[in-house]
Length: 353
Ligand code: XIL
Image 1 (cartoon, protein in one colour):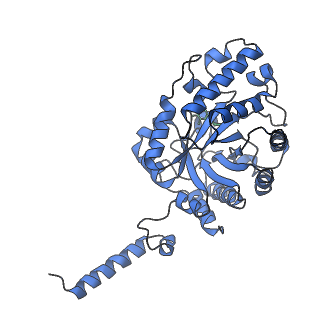
Image 2 (tube, helix red, strand yellow):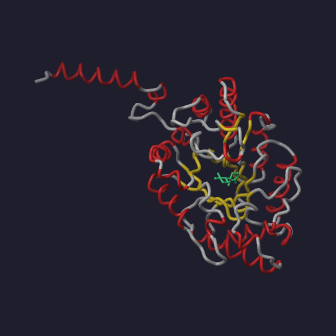
Image 3 (cartoon, rainbow, N blue to C red):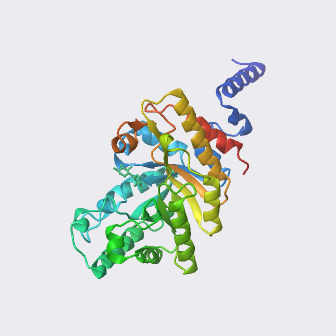
């Protein structure tokens, strides 16, 4: 039998072992029995840290388990897009989106809805048809209304309109713009609001993280929408960055100017790709950029959170979309941490809340 003294010694040894095994952040939170996750750290600043997930990836249990424990938010990578949700006119299929919402809520993750209106991944029946303005307006209204109603209370935000601007700040010549003119954006926001009075309504795009013609166009549009009383609550910066394209210009200042318009800002699809093979220098530069994006968000109160577009190089849209490029995420194919993971962690730890 153990004497009390021995028991104390054993307990002390166990404690020392535990402390030795734990990362430094552990010492600051003695009540925790696991290291703080990225989402735990983000929460200390009132932000979330999330990752997108595509339906087939849920079957990779190592991946989906880590998604559920490390992150506080997710976005369906494809499951809520128009081709998935309304594959035939007026026939709605919520299976893929529901699967992700159910998974997320079981794990305690909140969900961003993505996306109601986009020029890409539209069903054939829509792109191959010829529509009058009245017909297309009715189609768009019905789509937005049904999808938003179905997800009411399940998602906290919607990317209502995705990628509606060109690089030079003019409107993209999508089927919606060509048929309906620029007023379709305000209509879409109003229909979404009518279907869910509580969800945050976002405009979302890439190459808008820094100051420039494209972000200027969104700045002007959101200012105008606000002045007209159109419901717009947030601006999503996808942040699909690439080392070879350089770091965007004044991300912090850009986030701040949108916040000053009275909208939330979110980093919605962060990944930082490079030309393969990746070397140590590139991975260090990538880490630096991940840290800078994280700090820029934390610097502005209304930047509400950061979402990675998948979190490991094993599940990333980059290699198939940009052949020869990849290594874009903070975890490698084996779910090991890359330098980028530590950089995010450091940025989350260093910032004052
Ligand atoms: C991507 C998905 O990750 C891919 O699986 C799909 O093949 C194409 O779309 N901007 C967006 C996202 O808003 O919806 C895109 O997602 C990536 C670029």
